[in-house]
Length: 259
View 1 (spheres, rainbow, N blue to C red):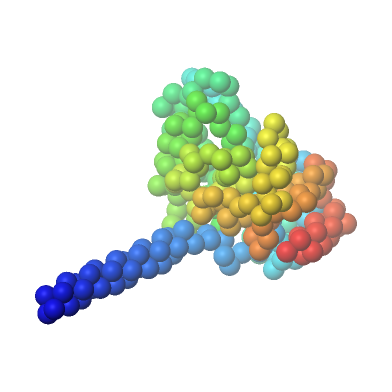
View 2: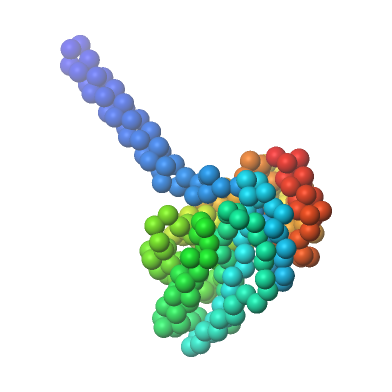
């Protein structure tokens, strides 16, 4: 009997140790992937390539993600198109510099990738919190994109975050996004393309995005507001028209009601 009790005690200790290790791992894991913009406004307006007068915004309520430049890539060349249109913002507003990447079907060379990284990093001084990259990478471009993100992330100044926009299908069905070296991936809930109906059914039925970094935020558009999606998240709002006081108030009202 004594031998049996010794075995039972040993098993109990192993179970307890495993439980403690599991809890510790979960705590560490959640800490490492905490929301990088937890102290920032819960709504960001995308300011795309057109004049925008947003000096009336309340910095405590709204931030602005400003398209800073567009990078056009092919296999052996890179072209950089800086923002040409003015944006008027109030003092002390939280800003994110957005980089749009466009490419041909050919995967860029290492030289082109390194120059793209340099161009992206040059924008860190134009943002109060970090950079967001907007790139609808094809399947053949994913290794290139992963390497580019890793190089940008490793060279960014301390305290600056790296965000990307992400197709909704990537965040639901495609595991390739789960371990990208970024702080935030923003599921885009508009212009869904061929999987539109299936994605909307999934979200309306209570489905959520799978990777942890896709659960901090979502992206919506004023001309295609989602019927339902998980609430309590940061919301990036796109407007195909110039922002006005009325459209900003409409966006904020929608977000408040939706949450």
